[in-house]
Image (cartoon, rainbow over all chains, first blue to last red; front, side):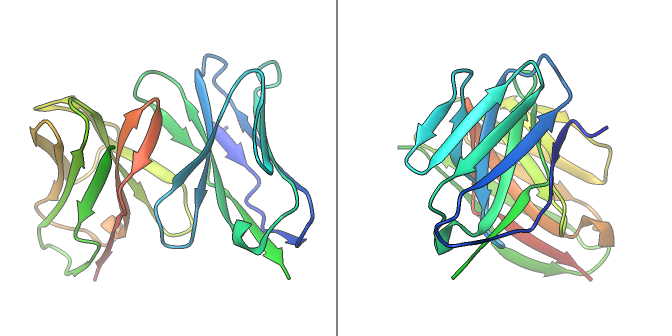
Length: 109
Length: 109
């Protein structure tokens, strides 16, 4: 079983739609959780950290479920510019950041 | 503010040739530094991390090596490249979250 698993997609959604991604992790001792966005042929960029209480940044909401060992990302009112690959990242240990393979999102006009 | 740069951005090298990728961080001291590789259509794989000058930890056996000659400089090297070394190489530093350089795209022919 992979340490961090994501549905690769692609998720094709119309503009204005709400879309949700899930990510599961295997190490129950994992300490920190993040969502990154990666555009084609570019470096990953931090979208948001995921806190135990859940957090929201504009149209984006992230949640953590430690009991079931998954994190989620919800995007409301999708924009064409949201089209990208979304990477789930789990930190297990001080220096060990484990990346999922990413979920591709395409927002269609 | 902190910035991270890596170069070259793109390179095409023949099999058996040497490699040197450089990464520098500005605006912070004693950062934790990382080298990741992303093969086409795959997730990020941690290659090396460093917690200080001369301190290198390797995550996977390979024909690559890393060095940290200065506090904010991290170098990825190879004496003889293989076809399988092709990929997108990313340098990063951490402060809780990971922050990436722009990446170096290597094609080995």
